[in-house]
Image (cartoon, rainbow, N blue to C red; front, side, top):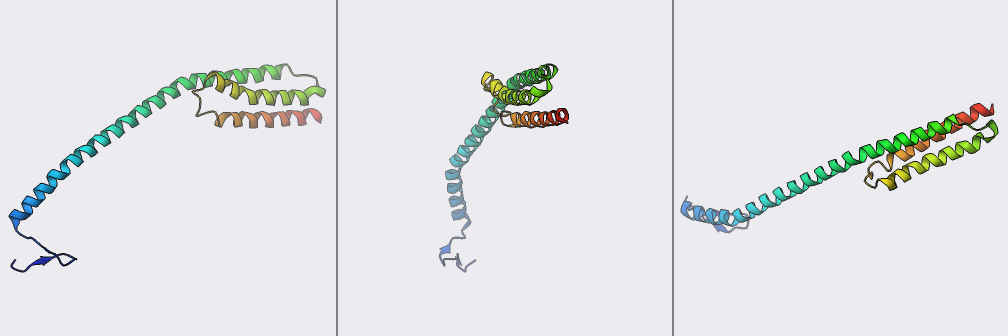
Length: 144
């Protein structure tokens, strides 16, 4: 222990237990307020995250019935239009009308309920593709 201890920069440092204990105690006292700040920041962030989660869940709970009713209305409208099928020579025009109406239904539903931000992109494309493929299939059957 008589030998001096040096760090990488060749500075000597103390190995006296009392001196080390005093310095360590001072450092811990300086770090304690920082620890408390970090605990408070973490608690605040977790509370904000939980609040965001609750708000999102409430928005989804409110949006699902509106979305379901607009989908039901669009399906009923499509079914109603299918039952009132026009003569064969007007089928192509009707198919285009159905397609345009199916494309408008999601936009109208979104305007009626602006909380449906999540589904706005997913389901109009699906309806458009299904309606378009159905119209092509129906048109090809009737034109043969």
